[in-house]
Length: 421
Ligand SMILES: Cc1ncc(COP(=O)(O)O)c(C=O)c1O
Ligand SMILES: N[C@@H](CCCC[NH3+])C(=O)O
Image (tube, rainbow, N blue to C red; front, side, top):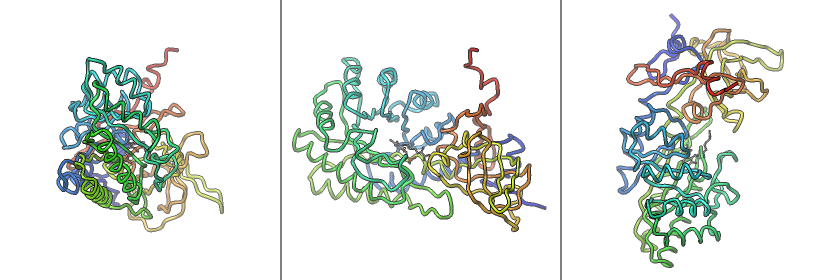
């Protein structure tokens, strides 16, 4: 009897038949293992440390509920993410609100709901927030700094360099002005700084360099204003394995190095060690997800390339098109076939760039086979679109070998529901 690919002990071909394809499959067990790892290797290891899940990586009500029952807080960047987190019952105090262009409505909503910390991205946002807070609210804020460091990753997911749309540039006039304003304003409670240097990082240099700069800034503020900075949020960015060539480092390679700097510099500068926050997104969910597709057309251009075409593509996973991201995959119903051939996995959108995987060895593929793409838990569902009027796939959650539909497949009525004709 032929054996199929199992994901967390559940037959993936059975899932494809039960829920149809394309299908996102997430594992609650893997997500909880990752959260537990953060707890043991960071939160329990160092006092006054906090972890916030960067919900842009993957957010549904079921995911928010997993975070709610963990020790973690949640990072949101829009009204939509904030609304989802609150709807799932997350305590507003455990929400960190980010974004490089928060609207007046978003800020007002955050103030009214008593969101834990607002990460202010620039001087104009700070002024707006102070005005909105007025006499009615006092809110805790962090200032996002752009520490002017190079992170070794794709240009589009590098965020800590000088020329960046995020944060207040390190050692700039705007930053000096923002610090002074934040300290003097009675309507906000200035807690500290945030930086996020980039995503899918395999080395810790950018984090360490930025930590040094932030600690120096904290000392300068103590000297100049006799003001004690309490919080330092060092962002996320911890890389994961997508293919066998990737060599991700364990979380503590980043966090231990950051804490080492923080502790040494707090001693050296004779300042109180700040509370340290991290914000992992991809690290928690990427490897907890797979996507299942059905193979349709198979096209062989002799001596050039063999394409296998699937029923999804850049609409459900734009990462290969955007960042030349690489993925591994298998034919779920031919798991143990040893006779393989080199093929290219193409999506069904009307774009030549809609290629999910260039060059992968797979067993002889035929129409109707099920392709399982690994490591799609982060920035796939959350970045999906309806391009070519494709309906967004369903999401299934596996927990203790049981499968549960957590997001329904979009219907064609859904696609037209806001279209007034
Ligand atoms: C402010 C902020 N925090 C956290 C993250 C999470 O990053 P990652 O998914 O790489 O951990 C991001 C996204 O890159 C971000 O912009
Ligand atoms: N969307 C990006 C990462 C998010 C960056 C957010 N600052 C990716 O898929 O790799």
